[in-house]
Image 1 (cartoon, rainbow, N blue to C red):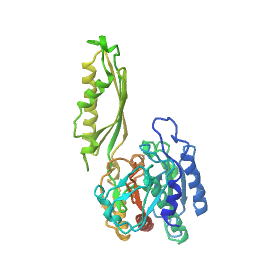
Image 2 (cartoon, rainbow, N blue to C red):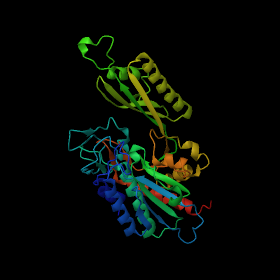
Image 3 (cartoon, one colour):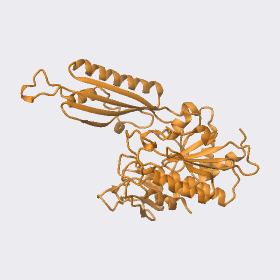
Amino acid sequence: MRAYERFLKYAKIHTTSAEEQGVTPSTPCQWDLARVLVDELKELGLENPGVNEFCVVTAWLSATPGCENAPALGFLAHMDTSPAFSGEHVNPVFHEHYDGGDIPLPKEGRVIKAADFPFLTGMVGKTVITADGSTLLGADDKAGIAEIMTLCERLIRDKLPHGRICVAFTPDEEIGEGADHFDVAAFGAQYAYTVDGDAAGSIEYENFNAAAARVDITGVSVHPGSAKGIMENAILIAQELNALLPPDAVPGRTEGYEGFFHLDALTGTTAAARMDYIIRDHDRAKFEEKKALLQSAAARVRAAHPTAKVELTLQDSYYNMKEQLSGCMHLVDNAKQAARLAGLEPEVKPIRGGTDGARLSYMGLPCPNLGTGGMNFHGPLECVAVEDMDKVVDILTHIVDLYRTRAD
């Protein structure tokens, strides 16, 4: 079975995660895909397939004879899709022999415009899969799951020699909780890769340092006709705070290694308002400066409005995995070589986000990230090419082969 065939099945299973639920998985629908994957792992013949109480699916393949001294190698992907856009009732649409032009989607009048997305030139002649325009597609990260499952099938079917292979599929990665209940020691891998990136052949071992911030503002609400000198409008205080942050340090005006403040949500009334930020920077020192700047802005606004209440809650989410991979750059070098063996030129780039691999690297499992072939994640313009998914499976197969003779 080809990877895209598995992907079509997984994409139709609703697995959207949800913020601030206080349970793992954050949504019960993620169990539906977990159970399907456990059954498939059993059918493929992997050892000890199962799902724990936190919806983490794991299984492994023992090393083949002669490869017992190779390092145990892990491959991971996540089951949930982003809560940023609907992932329910996904209807995949095929666009065969893509000609390089705009791709109109059947619903909502949406169009994937070639002028806006230069990566589409690399999909010319291929079969492109999109959603119908009313949902996201779910290639992030069900394409990664499909590719790992297809790798396992290939290793078993073709009796390819390999070291110990460990497989895991996690919930809640999209809300930053995918590694919360991951047991690195029980997983048993010495090194690992997440398969959760975009272009086939892309390799990422640098990611943002990340923090989440919440500002709760309690205003003073009185009748507007007699409000002079008394009213403190919580919404206006929120605007005042945001204006103290650098206007160009936002996602829409940054790229590459540039960090940002992202005001992800602002809700409220005169009486009370809430602001939710995410703070990102690849450089640890600049990351700390950004957190300090937000704390300073909150303090200034608090001082300017003594009868109101301004509370800032700031919490780190994850850190740049580069700091943990400095002694394991063979993971990147072998991924580059594997991409070339698959006929692709590898692209090493920083992640403008994070993956389970970032947290796992700090938990003792060095874990860079590989592309899935999917693009335009977290929205209705998401897409993936059938042929690119095949290439990712080839890359994973070459990585396994490169490690089978390595003795650590």
